[in-house]
Length: 219
Ligand code: GAR
Image (cartoon, rainbow, N blue to C red; front, side, top):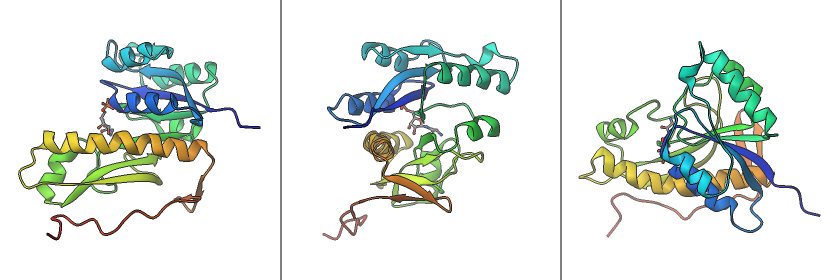
């Protein structure tokens, strides 16, 4: 007997390219998760169209319609519980969540961030990476904890930073990596292969990647 797929909500604020990567992954036969709801805090964003095109129910919960963060999050929580959501993916969701919401969904809430955390938190991450002169950047999928852009790391993907990169060049390269990393993290979790020990992630049967990745390369 196979387990029922994990019921996932994806929260977005914009174009939803990571949402699309998750939609495409969930459409693969045997993928262990299913997106039951897409919620945006911004009305009329392209991500909502992507969801509708895939036949996934959407909701817009506009934070501006609420007197404070708690009221906004109560509405969010009610929607999620009403949909029978078991797990939440933040895919370009640009609202900071309060400790109360994070605690309510503890270890059932993951986020993607476009840097190799703990480096370069917050906004303008690609500018930060270029200013620091790092040879690699990338993305991180992590469990959400109350402090911004922190929490146990599930998957990271590294990309080289090239000499003439603009922030937009680097963002585009990192985004391609995000589209691989996020579905992988969700798959590992939905397969029940991810556990936490002392706030570090352990992954059953994780494969060692090929090494070393040099930038510049040797030849
Ligand atoms: C992605 O690059 C994601 O990592 C970032 O927003 C973009 C959303 O793009 N998220 C954050 O910066 C959160 N701190 P998308 O809407 O095309 O998925």
